[in-house]
Length: 468
Ligand code: BGP
Image 1: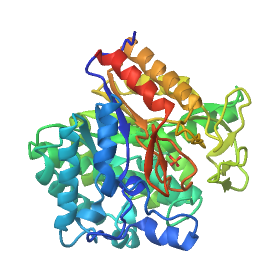
Image 2: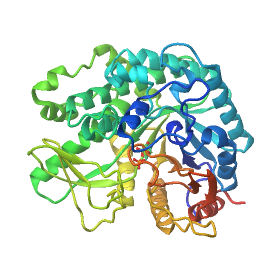
Image 3: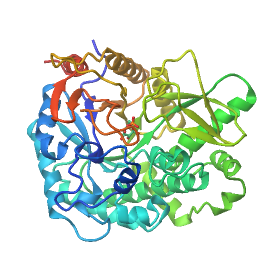
């Protein structure tokens, strides 16, 4: 019997650019990925999962398999194609239809405003490094709240501020493909926290009904051993990737402890970090108004001191064992033979999720609620001739992580939801189409949906939590 409460939301997650396809129809504007992918020539964002046309089928499947909540993101570029100009009615109508369909099937929509898809025109002006983008984001958010507040009650401002800008400025796997630029990465982290805070303040001051939160990608960083240098490297890594923004999110300022590490990482460039008093004011105002934190957790990493040249190889092909991550002054991700990995070298470590949830409760006792907004296993699923997909590894992965959440709940953390990544197979930003996560398998050529074993398992879990 599950120990999760009846008001726990068992959900599944998606993101506009990864599922919709139809990236040029009905007035949609371009986003940063369009040009980047065209240049790379590896993958196309079309047709993805053709959710633009098949959303009803996917929402119906979600409902049939016991899913109570679905994460959907609204593409800024469908609603305001160039980010700042005219509003596109077709985009507005599309999302209204999607949300109405969710309600028709009894699946609650949880809506993200920004999921890695800045409109191209704004991206060209610097994306989150450009403080003017925050005004444009406010306008977009207000428009979306005004349009849908009657049918959407759960909002998320930004998906994974760190993963987005780490991809943009550290690993180079995301457009514009820069590497090792710690200043840009930290500046864009801060600017996103401000953008998020301003939207929370707007939402609360206008008195919309419902809840609003932020989604952080939180990875646990453990020292590979007890050597002090390695322990310090793990600590620094954690602040760079988690701690800096967690402070900003929950406290509304950065503690001296975090700023000391940021200063060490940036050296002389620290002076260039642009953090303004009026921005801190917005952050301080937003922190106590935050209704929930969404945690996206996939993996933990083991860290060792590294002070030589930086070198990163992003394993975007699923060739196991090819990842390299070494950043001068921040640390190196090293192999931990005791912990299993998937083909993309992501460590499978459910205890890390438990540790992270407990850490939020202990470090930020003012947190109100936690949802696990993404967690899942990237896998090269095989469709059998009879249309079945036996994804036991995914079932193991999900069930172990749900156990960790259940333990955290029993240990007194207010963790109230789990959204498996992902509802259906979809396009993966830097890995294309062979890294599948879905409960539902998609043959991308025919767009036919198949039920994986994990979907059947999920349905049984849902019955266990909610009863018949
Ligand atoms: C998160 C993103 C998702 C999704 C997921 C899996 O960072 O929020 O959009 O892509 O990770 O990552 P990937 O597709 O790189 O395997």
